[in-house]
Image (cartoon, rainbow, N blue to C red):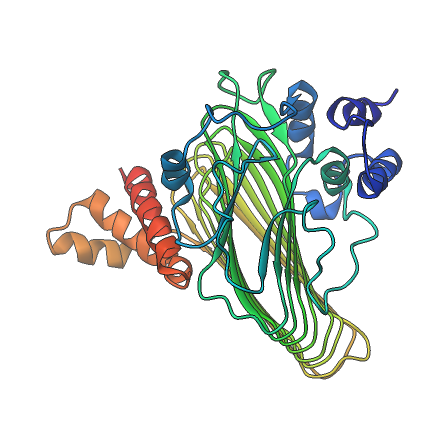
Length: 434
């Protein structure tokens, strides 16, 4: 038996699998985990992740124990944002920790199995094939699925919060006691509707491995705000994929923030499938120590008059390594495409490393596509100016780092999430400046 086959058998038992799990198993059987030499995975240490998976244990089956978490812990780790909340502990839905009793009219949330009869009008059919081996493993081994369904012509004035909590063993690196989970979330927003969704990934400490998949579907004329906050402990591993599908004249603003994690891959794949759709993607990542944070973004302009922006910022400290690969595809026969990429990076030490790779594939003539990337250190003149005003060096460095990151954090809504991220950012900038 190959190592991939053995991994699948251990992490994805065959009992009780559904059609999606079967498709995931079939894909994984055929392809296995991604080739570490593949261009799309060049900055993600696949070999190290594989080794961690081979020594990890699946999350325990059954309902999550209320002893591993309580509401104050969830609030402290993920924030409290005043709207409906779904909480999953090690991949299992926790009714005790969730707030689903009172939801606005037109909103349906919960475990996807219970909401299976409902689909937001205008939403496309489910995906036929996983994107890669990790995505296939998510399909094959996942348990409960978070679902956020918004009916047509519904306008939500509070965000929906989906929280994934990972617990872990007592070791200090991803070893035999690391718990592996495969969270999956589906967000479907109906025709002409507006909705905001916050998805938080948090942990109680210790090693854990998260292999997540989120699908966001915006029907015609829908406006969706989606924030993905990856805040697991420093020794955690997270391989995550967000797939966004947009119909005509839809608007999606999506922000990704990586606050911690030993190895984090944040893949965002957007398909602008209808004329006049707009996608605005932003992100912030702050690897330190020997952490690896890899952002891989693809926007596929399938239809005409589409607009897309990508604005990701990296702050890299110590021996950390941060990377951004921004891919834009403009299909043949489309017109009026406007696409822009930006990836400024701040490198705080000589041993830190930032990688940036813009990639444009343009098969049409009527386009405007731009990209820009920088890798630099703190501005010596600005630092000197602050110090000349009596501000200590560490505080001055923290102020400049916070100002660099603020453009992403300050654009986040709702205010409760912005304040939660600002508090974290203040703590982190003080740490890296001292």
